[in-house]
Length: 249
Image (cartoon, rainbow, N blue to C red; front, side):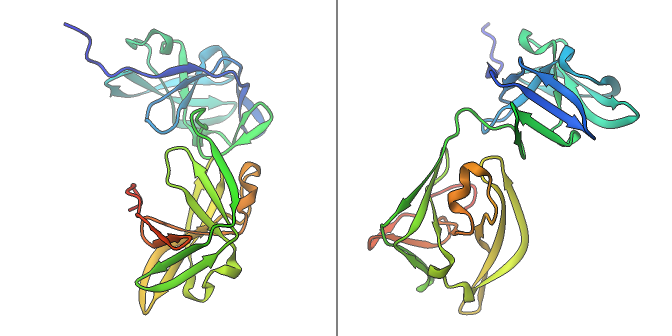
């Protein structure tokens, strides 16, 4: 009978990867492997010999249909014990994984690709972000109320996501927007803050956002406002655009 286990996508990572804790380099490797545990982005699996820490089994384990049994470890760095911060697939059906260790992203203070810091999670080689200025007239409405109208938006094209329309605040009805405490993070754009929108007394929570100080590759959307086009009506040069169907719908 053919092996019906899901296949694991693994690719070599040509970048120099480092992870630090309290100023000490814990991960230092030029042979990290990219392993797709989820479809959206890879995890970094490091050769055990490139880890400057002790791995202490903590008795926990888990089962992956594709990678096999995983043994969980506490990571000991100097006098610091980071509980349940790593795992290995010692007897994995995927031979490439057996000598590698996966460190939880949050276990270390900082991660680097070459000399550039990486945030949130490893970036996928499949994802590209393009930000282009556009003179097309963008109109955003909700329940018949115009929320924004601009001919100087920036369009953000990110692999796997709908086009996002970032609009200068002077072209947005900021009087309808109220800041919320919500914050999200993206390894390509940075940290976003959100607004709720009041349309004739109906509050639409976290409908709009902005990256006030985005990461360098996304600097062209700094301070611009974007609305979920899954939840508003969007017209481009007078033509209504269908609302995309995504997890944000």
